[in-house]
Image (tube, rainbow, N blue to C red; front, side, top):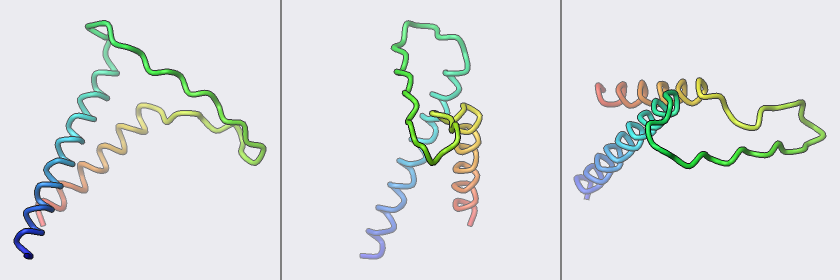
Length: 81
């Protein structure tokens, strides 16, 4: 049973890593001019909240790239352990 759990975890980790790779490719593609006609995502409307100061409606591309880098670093650290 423990072997099965390890296999499931390994498969899940591999699928997660592949998803991260796809996310990284998508983020990199957003930084370049589009080569084909791609639908543009809708802009998010600001949420009105009297308790918050003018918070951005979407994280910046650099924030997403930093998050991906952190996740990749975590995965590499887990792989080398």
